[in-house]
Length: 323
Image (tube, rainbow, N blue to C red; front, side):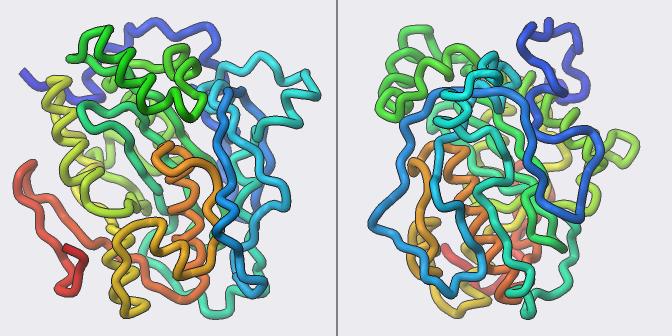
């Protein structure tokens, strides 16, 4: 029998290090007026800045002069090195530091249907291994907060998991933090729902749908295919907030009148530098966020491109779309 995420027992024992509202990078009050530099917890990553991609000086979305890898123990609320200057110098502990926005360059920005965008980029082919979401204010283009969890598979053997994580995350230097922090998918969704509720973007009393917000993905796979697959594997009912989403590739095609096969293509065409490691979920979500910011600054209307009528029945709303 399927269980909804909200019906999952809250008897999961919270890990002692899971502090500050499940590792969210912002305080409970949601700010929509300025980018905030926040503190929480940390991790190891050997992610790199792609030197082959150089930002054009005229870009509306700026980046920090010295990129640093994110501390993933921090994103999980488990960093115990916040008093260590060397650690703070080496790793990023802010959700907004990489997303500078020059307000003077936003003259083409238009009104949007949504107040917030939730940029999602899952990782994991067999089961979901990483669930990162970047929360973007549609009016200011600022990054308000981020949610990040490593996900422990439920149907894979321990040996298979170890081999899979070593192959995927070992080369990025984050396999250890994955093993230290990964939690089951149903617990991830419960944490995520708590995070959405704290930002007043979701609630059971609202029928379980998102309020004033929409998911943004680079392709349809994340919400159309992988989330339902994982819910089935986990014996959970598909949450109602996954019933519609925005495929940024389709919006990109209709706005710029050119087809982009993926995130890296969009970044090259928009002359945005790639930061971090491709296929590390949180870094990809951040890079997709920077594409989104640029499109918003250029005047694109970021609208829903797909709507689910049942787990198997999905309607694509734009005639001109990437197939």
